[in-house]
Picture: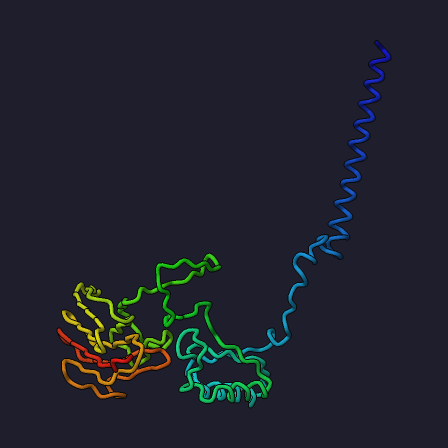
Length: 289
């Protein structure tokens, strides 16, 4: 009996010694890894998984300028010349919106920046980096998806495509040309953004007054009727071609004065600064369109 108790005591001491030795080894591994391996070599196999971190270019950390008062080439040049005259180094000039004809259509507004290729090249030859402001949204309202159809795409959770039903009519309050649906001259007007023809519908304003809108296109004639509480308005109508004639309540409107056609955006634009209770617009097109 005494021998068996002594044997158990020996096994217990051996087990405790093993635990202590294992703890010392584990502690040593932790100290070596966090004290030497991680600071000098990083996480093992991590380089092959992530690659080398990008190095920020020096110019990105130098002086940037941002012109957002007049938004045109003359203002940018004046700003850069002013800094150069006072010997203040500048590396990057950011061209803020609206530099394009609308949000993210990548078409430079040449009324603001004439001969853009020449202008931007001159800035680069002077040693400036040129950055153009934009958002992650891209407008493709000329692209039509015929349904029913199923397609897939990958989008971040906070970014997703928005679709507009063909025939939609959207009343908008436009005061700048960011959207491409108007400009500063649209201030004070209700901008009716129309996508082809879409039947009849009613719209209630913030004053609870109703505007009735009806549109249709048949055999070379597109008709738009507005009645009810019709405020001064601008019509931006997506149509496939330029009309040969535009009538407003049977009166011929003058092209380039009262209406115009934008071939790039495929839109007829009509402005009427006069309030009323009933307006009818008739747009005539070649039958072969």
